[in-house]
Length: 312
Image (tube, rainbow, N blue to C red; front, side, top):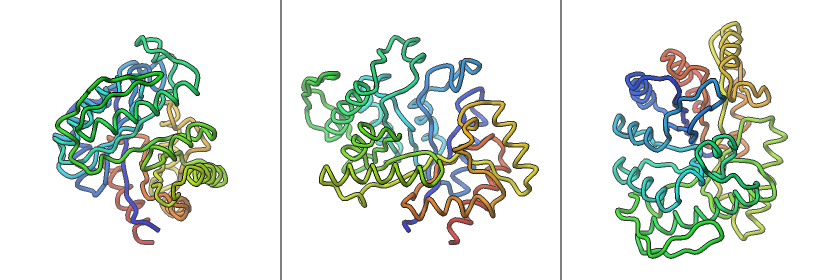
């Protein structure tokens, strides 16, 4: 198995800056490898939560509060920023953070959000094609030379992106999802890493096999594709505390309403389950916690789950 790394999603709703800073500093101290933010603009996970911190701005602030931990988007929506502007913003973030950017990039799925902000929301095929053009522009601009590109969805003319990102050849690119015909083929063509959810192992193995088939079809060695897993994690020392935390998280909505994606239980249950994914190539676990501002709970995950996986 590859060396394991661990990420943590930060809250983006109703949280003061002081609490966010404390969480970022705690995660870095405890040995988390990365912090992650989603790219939504309003009403996420539902209309009951209209206030959402913007992704790239938040990552820039987190960069200023930390020194080592990496900073990721999961995932930046192609429709929400012209890709040339996205290239500029992320290159700046990478340069000023000391080369800590992890770029997750995606086609977008939240139709209501698109309409509210005036963005077109075409069918899935067009969104994936648009995302692929966006990634071509971003990767080309990150090289620092003038770029001209005329596609069906995006175009730039003699655009330059300086300063370049600090990382070479470029910051790692992650694409998440499981659409078998188009999305996973785009992952095989453009991404350094594939992200998926902590679904049952049979489903995960199937999606991975489809991705690897696309890699081989495109002439790419599947072993060059890193794998990360977004884990809706509910754990505690006692089963009663696990149940209480799970029910509280369900009431808040979002990913914790999907029972098939929950990894739940005491550490002696969740560590072996996560190890099953590691044996299937996952090297980065990105934890979504019921309450990431609960400092003792974050410490418990670091000491009991992360360390338990490292000990295997």
